[in-house]
Length: 293
Image (cartoon, rainbow, N blue to C red; front, side, top):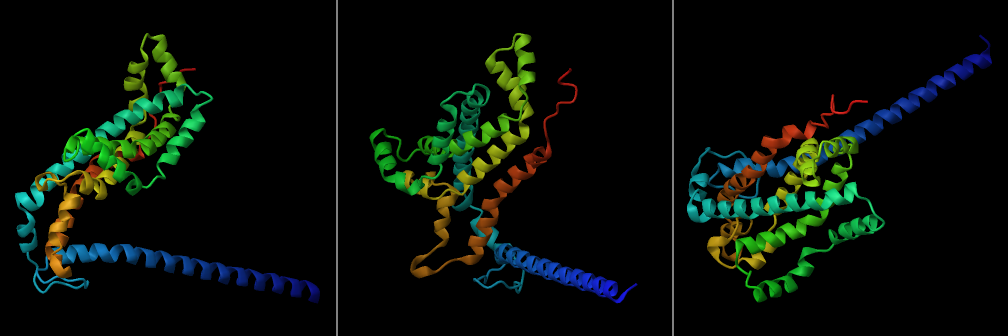
């Protein structure tokens, strides 16, 4: 091997080493950033768990001197937890059901009968999701007073469902587009109506899509504070997202242990919903044997 060839080979080796060291530094930087993000998310959760079993909890993340269930015992009452949680389940569960049903009915013609106005209509729907809910609450409050829906769970639930409907329609339509039209055409050939096709063919095949829309809608409604705070006046009708104010006393004093215990209980329904139906998220369209060429 000549001297020039050796020099070129050595240069290539050095270049590969430099590239390898740069890639290693880039991976290390990315891992450090991901670790920082994970810590930023994990620290509040760790504080929540530790503070819920500490009677002397404060804003510091520390191990309790003695593990106790006094905080849970203090909040597990009808006034603090059970009644607000029941109100939240009725309010958010009913609004989620209305949103999912209306979104499916609205998305079906948009997906299966495309027209010239379909895209502008969908863009309008997407634009309405950008409107801040706080900008609409003053006229909505006045309207609710006029139609006597103020301080009612069903009226508040209808408004919550309407506020979540635009994005739910957009999501539902995208999932519905993935269901093959050939299956519906086969059902029509057998004499099925449009409603029967939607209920017995399309919706069963888009189970993961329905799951995503349901979970997303319920989570958004479950954590909504401003709407029920404005539209519900009676203390006995307040949902848990609003009744959490009971843990904030005068002059900035906060009962951190009981607040953490209530937060753990408040998060339980969302986690239970996810665990019950998350297995469907990994599913797809079971089309094996459904379409015969």
